[in-house]
Length: 250
Length: 80
Length: 120
Image 1 (cartoon, rainbow over the protein chains, first blue to last red):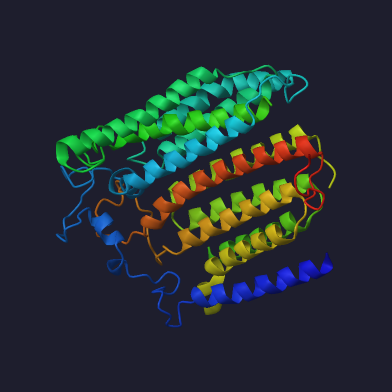
Image 2: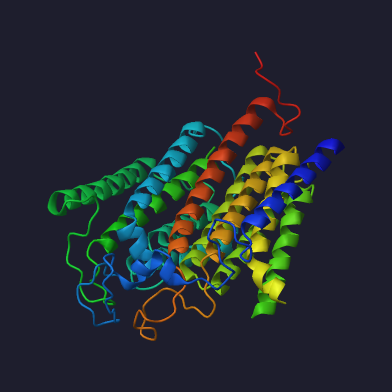
């Protein structure tokens, strides 16, 4: 086994030299990588996402004053995920669904014993009773305000799954209703596709924004982006909770 | 600010070496949680609050607990 | 000092990827291999986010204190791609661990030297 360790170390060091040469910003290889921190944003395609136009007309975006821009959310990362590149989000939802379904297929036998031998102590139970509704409310707040502050569907769904994990840690016999989780998840996925098809029928492209954008920075703005994020939050929360429930109960 | 980020990167590399070279399984899993937490702090210094929040919740919360549940399932918390 | 400025973030992420690759190639316990895959995941995500940093930039959100789009924002496109990659990473780790549990239940060992071929 010693020979295998030294050979692997040698190969990893050679690969490291090649990768360091590729990411060096001072030599001129054909990969267009500049030095760290000295990137000119006008040469990249992100300048169209920041100016909120893709046809090279420079518009002026002012918080709380601009009406009906091209993509109405104040958070630039949200407008990229849910409006400009929403097809990648659809692919990501598919990959999550396949992973959760594969795990449920391998570990789906619920006739074995539980993972924990007894309940947690009294202080943990009282603490979980106080913390669970507050964490749930925090998750819903992060999902709904995804287009104004940092946050969105993925973060809020993970917070909801963490709240359910707390319930699993406190009680020995806590079980989730898997039929309800399946119904929620399927409803969210199908609604996402239906919103995309409505955009195809009314405007001509899959997953366009068919509602009106309001003023940037208010709560009821940005068209269909908050609705997409609420559906993504429900789906991610249900899937991560299902993964944890299948891992604990056999 | 720059000295802080250099120290955090050094701590992250030491944690990665600890996660690969230790013999006890529980020590490796806790080092993985430490790497995720320091990566979330570095992403916050690089002015990316969305990504830092996601990495902190999923890396240091759900991944560590998934590993510990499998260790409970195979009843091998202390040996090689 | 300029060397450290240039190579601190990008070099640190590449070293993390290489340590994870070394762990996948040489460790013999199955759970150690899955932990090394997780380390490689974190390294790649940190590398992608650090390729979009601009010196003296602001976080890419329009607020009351940064109201216009003429200010110096950092690049928001790598952040949107890394957000998706982190969530997919945790799903991959969960699926790998479920397969490890089933292998342990059938063969009662976790060393890859003792798992050989199909047992009839």
